[in-house]
Length: 386
Image (tube, rainbow, N blue to C red):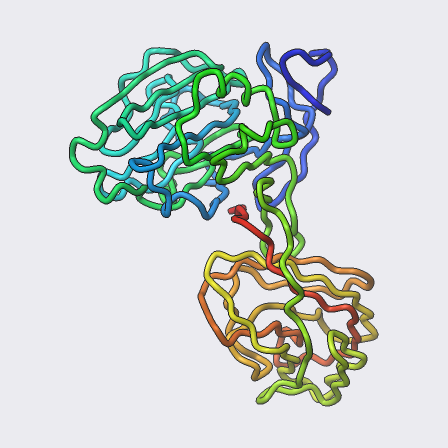
């Protein structure tokens, strides 16, 4: 469904079924107000759950030297609390936050904090854009109309000219005090200051509708209309501006050096037999992998689960011993036959990691085979749902 200004939209009969993922809901066919985003869905945040999506982008940006812009569509459920829709940690005069303060859409950037806005917020869909020029002028736009302008944000140095942390949607970086309550979609981040005309054009588009010039200096774009993963592993949303997959990383498997299967038969990316009958930890380890914190990996395989007392455990681990420590946020467990798909976000940089496939508990017995095992890095930054 494409909702937007100029589209043929009936405001009656719209319902809000959703897909629940770690308490964060992607709701489709949301009720339309007089101004609505072009989107097939939106991320729904519950303030009391401190829901958020960490984007993995922000800290490395240099707004004083390149300029900066961020925009999104938002629909809040509450006007009685201060809340942030897109923000990072403050750092030292390194602010970047956009949200609602005292019933107004507001922002803070550099050494400047929110508090001077004049336009009342509402519970309707609102397009919000913040631009920052290398001449040190920050401008807030609401539905394409100028609101607060602020300058001298680097009067105290903007510290080193960077932001205080990577950004999160739904809260202020790692701080849960100003968690968002409501919907957000179509989040875009640029290393340039957009013009008002560009803001007005972009607000009526999702990523597929952006022109080549509107993608110039675009760092990332998050439609937030669907998730990947969620039934084990890490639940992620894709940066539409770079969602390509890298080369295949798996070439072979060996039995665990300390905790081994009683029987393991492998060939290339296939495990034709993995059998543990004695009831102990057991794992098969892939060739060595060089993993970097924050990277997202897509893992697929075709499982035939023959028998056992528990599920197969799949993770990225720091050793080939068969029962190593995980270097990813979430582990994937399955006994579902057929093609499985999991996503892993690396939490610890490790140059000698392995894809480990084995038992979950030390008392498990199991018998399975697995073919077409694949691991590829997902390009660009990928948001993690919390």
